[in-house]
Image (cartoon, rainbow, N blue to C red; front, top):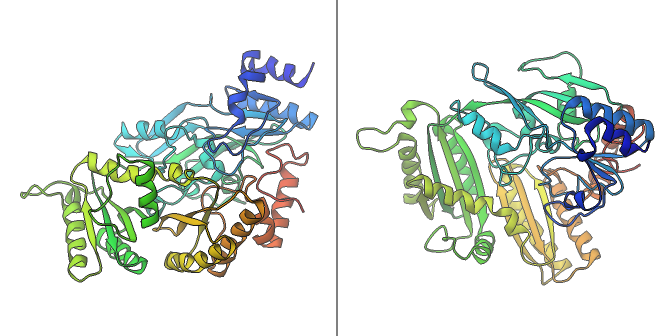
Length: 470
């Protein structure tokens, strides 16, 4: 029997896709990474995945796990490999209201978790533009961030337990709902963010949070990023840490958004250099129930804070959403960032993190270096300012690999000088392997290689991703 026949006997021949049936899986959302997998496998449970990996490990056949294919770094590139889709592991088996957890399969789409939690007046706070297609397995594998990290943390901070199939087919059961578990090495967090190189995540126990009873959402323009951080700190103090999103969209981003979406409304009547999207959420009745004047307290708080800053010149303009439609319009402007970044010719896209007070320094230091490399280049930035994550895109004058490499290294240089990280929330995949080799601490790389070799000695799990060769 061939390897595909062996696998077909386990999951059924209709679940082993080849040729034209497998072709749609060979291109990711970006369109930049294409491949022809040996086959696409669609197992229906953890045991079937375990049996597949036993066969793959015995035959030293590479296996690349895939979920919603919304990644940006080529992490699911699977040329001549078995591409293992978790899309059929799509069951939400439990919503535990008392302990506020959701037990889900790796193939559950993020928006479905949102809907299931919402039915119990709870929320799963991870949110991002691809929530309608991104799956839990991929979000965990990349330790995805999103727009609410400022309050709730990245995906790693929202997961209590995991089920993982190891390279040799053994199933590791870490499906705990415990908030404290000090029983040895933290294998759960080791698997989260490993992009399927150490094991295949099949299920998870996720943290749920209180569903906000009211939101205050606004677009504001400030004279500088320093003023924006002052505003963030004031709002955090006023709300007891209730700021859910604090997103920076400079003039270049707003202009490009309006170019791509001509029916969209500009945030203000006049254009400004520093535009911030703010969302504050209230879970307590005292902040969410309208008073005798009909105003929601959390909205009044935001109005008063912004009004004070307008009076003393620390704020240039402000527009507060008056209804849900206006709130969604504000959010759409930010969630269109993927389309904005990938629109406009040849570009270099980076995803970095710097300390919160260094975002302005990043811009100031990087622009002249970009112009020195390519005088005709232009830039667009959008940033999760509340956690220091910057998405920087440089549109270059011509498709020249040397220019592209030089621009990536220029970004790396600035990030390193500012004490930042070259990868914030998109993962490593293949696109950042060279950066890992150049910038990651050599001892850390050796430790990663040792862990990979110990857990996957035949190097079958997503080979060639995340960890550069020695």
